[in-house]
Length: 485
Image 1 (spheres, rainbow, N blue to C red):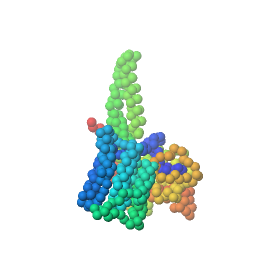
Image 2 (cartoon, helix red, strand yellow; image 1 turned 180 degrees about the horizontal axis):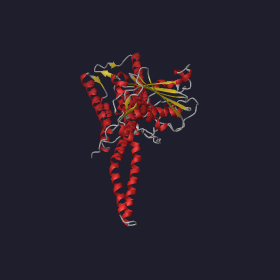
Image 3 (cartoon, helix red, strand yellow; image 1 turned 90 degrees about the vertical axis):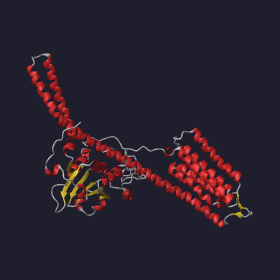
């Protein structure tokens, strides 16, 4: 299975077309540079808010609280931010998106400006010193890990310097306002821990969100592709059916004209050409109709037929597919009828593809149905899932590469790891519950199933939620519907 790639990253190759042709295309989500996510206008607006907050704090501290501050130097530091903002607003367009280096420079400037302002206003004795964590959190959510680590290191250095060197805060009576050494040290430790913890926390959460977003985008692409194939097949079959009658009329009329016209005449030659071209159109439409016939006449189908359709593209890939369809006790012999949903077909096709990819020689596909549930199990005789990854199957990406059972690397399967994620997401959307295990663990001691030592995935639906009443259930194919413009 592509989940069990020797390089440890989940991947997804094209699952093939609906009618057995293996697709070489891979569904991929191109990574976007983190630095290109943020507009310059956003950072400028945030900086204006910071400037307003800094000036308000200085005015309140000096005039309302009577604290002596080097106010002229503080205004010079704030003025540098104002000049920077005005320059950026005038030079660059409002819609400009910053690259990695530009974003890093902007955040580094804010970090240094805040550090200088804290130096002039008491260092870590200033309760606003905790704000130095802010730029690091912004970096963790928008920049690369290297840039975030650099800014985090700079922030820790600034905090350390501020703990040792700063201008004192004094009251109007000349009293120096500072914390005891033990509290100062505790503040330093708390800010350093905040920088590290919040930086790492923000980084992990944002990375997880964007990985999931990219994987869901690929899932939508896969579903749209399957839906497009389904719709195209129906249109082709309908066209082949509806055009059959006029083509037959053209064929009959041209043949009669050819018989009535003088032998060897140019008109007779043209009539026979029309007849031959009508035959050619009939053959083309017949071939196309085979592609879309099922979609026209089988909006719903037996569950086993849907499974066969999902497995069809992988039937000729050198592995033996063994189907075992049987009802549970007291259940009807006829399989339930379900809608041929693209989600189910594409999801099952991915699971079967993964089993074929890693199977030694055989893949077992078991369909079971009872009065309340419909269950499908896909098993193989391959190496199975790595034990340490069993609890993480379905994640769109595994960060650490893991070696397979034979220690080798599997070429061509190095990607975001979307195969199992797409299959799991699409099938769960249809109401299924999936469970993953290794046959070597599940069938230990069962001699009848001892060959099934590889990976096993079990998909279970509620029969009431999946089963529908359709033409297949009653044996009919439904009434042909004309094509309307």
